[in-house]
Every structure is written in structure tokens, then in C-alpha cells.
Image (cartoon, rainbow, N blue to C red; front, side, top):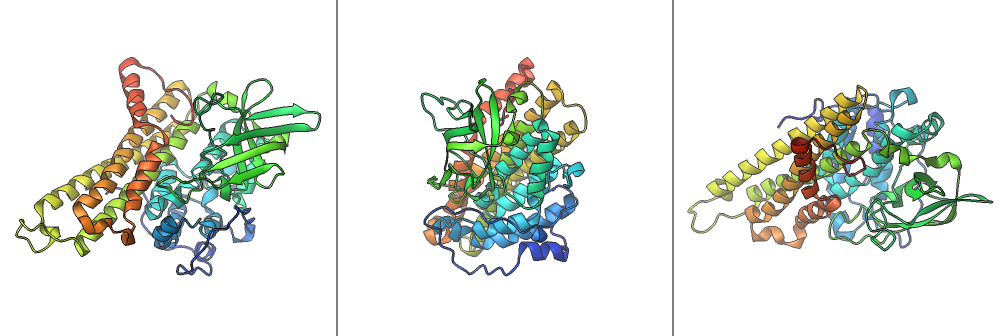
Amino acid sequence: MTHVEGDTPVSLPFSIIRAIMPDHDPSRHHVPDPEPRLPAIPDPARVTSIIDDAQALAAAHALASLVAPGAVERDRARRLPWDELDRWSESGLGAITVPREYGGSDVSYATLAEVFVILCAADPAFGQIPQNHFGVLGVLREVGSDAQKRRFYGEVLAGRRLGNAGPERRSSGAATILQGTTRLRATPGGLRLSGRRFYSTGALFAHRLPARALDDEGRSVQVWAPRDAPGVRVIDDWNAIGQRTTASGSVLFDDVRIDPEDVLPIWQLAEQPGLFGPTSQLIQAAIDQGIAQAALADTLAFVRERARPWIDSGLEHATDDPYVIADVGRLHIDLHAAHEVLREAGETLDAVSRGPVDAQASARASVAVAEAKILTTRIALEASEKLFELAGSASTRAAHGLDRHWRNARTHTLHDPVRWKLHLLGNYHLNGALPARHSWN
């Protein structure tokens, strides 16, 4: 399989090893806190400064090797990855998209996607948690002021994590994802934020909670509320069948005082072409690719080590079954194809970002990422379901935890419907229609 250049494990500088894996004992059992706690503030002295793409990929491999051994237990016990996320902060990976002029490494989009593939192959729930961190950094890049960029990028370079107070549940006031009742109001006591959000992946573990709201003029704004601000409450009420430890539950804002400098004018994103939507979707596709890779790897291991041949085959080993062999070959083709199209999508974003991002360029990026998202969705579902057919009934035993692959794939691939990705592609190629600009395109 062809990978992004530099994505194979390499020798790590001691500073990265020390930052990612200090005093780690994978055998320790962690019990979730009965009440959500505030995230610890990272020590900037322990946060690695990643300087280039190769170092980012190396750090991702090192972190993946740390989180993979506990993935089954975390899923089974729903143990939230607090300690692992502290290692994520210290790894420096949170700052890899910060522009160089603000002190970051500004890695390629292809590398960003591969970082998520690596982490999500190890544990897709853990790997999904930073998705909104990079999504809101993309918004900051496009509509933030220089002062906002210096302040927020500085926090990220120091290891702070960004969550997301996500869309609202469907109601009479929030019929679609882009609608909502959350409001930022000017009062005699300053700006105040009130509302209830859901699907807030990463919010429980974050130091800031960017949230969409409407201001007094009816414009969409993004409010970067501090996690510890009075009136902010994060509720760990996420109980989906998969991605169980993303803590993608509710965030409540109760008359929260907001600094005007913590407000981004995201209404401008609908008026100007950009890459914030394709960037978000590229990450979503990479998460599904990681799930698929993990599912196929576990399939091969189980067939080799535990599966028995069918009684009518006359074979001694399941690995000699020609039907199993053919299915494994087909899965590898589909996995390879999805990975390559994902890589090409990242490279398309890289090419677009180097020139003026006009409406046509933004559309090309959305189309490229839509193609990748379709293929990674399909292989994540196919590989995680085919696992049981090829590995046999023993693979369904709860002790193995292999059902997590399908549960994770089915849950995450519902993030946005593939049928509308197909519509986007067909409408673009047939009718020249440019995709709508939002976080799901």
C-alpha cells in the first residue's frame, strides 16, 4: 500500500519520546470520574515543538503505540482517555496546522489526514476526539483577526485542547444542523451566551469550547468560550453504540459572560470561498479509513491464529480456504483504493491552498474530499462486517471485543450521509453545480 511520504515508523527524537510516554503503565485500570472534571492545564515545557511533516507522522505513530493496547478495555468499560489526551497535548500534535508565521509547523493536508488514519487505526474513539480541534482551527485561519490568531494559536502551541459545542438536537427551533436557538446577546453587563448543544465531541476534555450562535443581528458567530467559565456545563450523556469514549454529549451555556475578542464572525464563511469545510471532511474520511485498517488487521490475525476451516473444504487451515483468500484480496484492494483517494484528496487541498481560493478551487477541494469520504465509509463498514464472516462464530465472543469495529464504523459514518456525497459529485460533474459551503462539504 502506498502511503504519504514519511508515514512509516521512524526513530524519534528523545524529546518526543519523553513528552509522549512518561511514566506510562498500560496495565493500570482507570475508573471514570463520577462527575466530569476540568482538564488539566498542560505544562508548556513538556509540549514538543513539531517542526515538519515527518516529525508529525513519527509522533502520531508513537502516540498510537501508546493508546492501542488499551483500546478494547476503554471501549468495554467506557473509560475516558484523560491520561492519553494529556500525552496527546504533550506530543505537540495539536499545533501541526498552526501557520509557520505564528510558530507552528503548518503540515500538509495529506499529512493531517494520515495522522488521523494512524491514530484511529489504534483507537478511533480516541482519534476522533481532536477532530473538532482542527476543524475550529481551520475556521480561525479563515476569519480570525491577527490578534485572535496570535492568542488562540499561542494557547494551542502550549498544548491547550479545543473542543466543540456541536449542533443542537432537532427541535422546533433547530430543524437542521445549521439551525439553532443558541444566542449571543449584548447586555448592559457585556456579551452573554445561552443555549444547549449536543454532539460535542472533545468538549469534555477541552480548554475552550467554540460554539455556533446567533448574535443580535441574526448573524452566525463562533464563540470560543473558556471551559472553566461560570455558566458553562459539560454533561457526559453520550451513550451511542460506538465511538463510546468520545464523550460527544451535551454542553450548556447559562448566561455565560463572553469576551468580545472570543467571537469569530463565521457568517463570513458563507460569503467567501475557503477550505474549512473540506478540511473537516478530510478528517472525517481519515477516521473511517483508520477504522477500516484496524478491522482488516484484526480479521487477518484472527483467521491466522484462531479460525477453523469449513468441514466440507477438506483443508487443514482456514488460511488455505480459497474463498477466504479471495475476500481478503478484495478487502485489500478496496482499502488501498480508499487510502489512495484519501491521500489524493489531501494533496488536492494542498494544491488549492497554495493559490487564490476562489469558488472553483473551493469546489474542487469539496469534490475531492467527497470522493474519499464515500470510499472510506464503504470500506469501514465492509471490513468491520466481513470480519465476522471470515473469522467465524468464535470472533463474536465478547472477550475479543471485535464488535467494536463495526459499532465504531456504523456510528461514525453517520456523521453525514454518503448519499448526499454522491449527489454532490453527480451534480458537480453533470450540472456544474458547486457544493454548498459548510462544515459537511
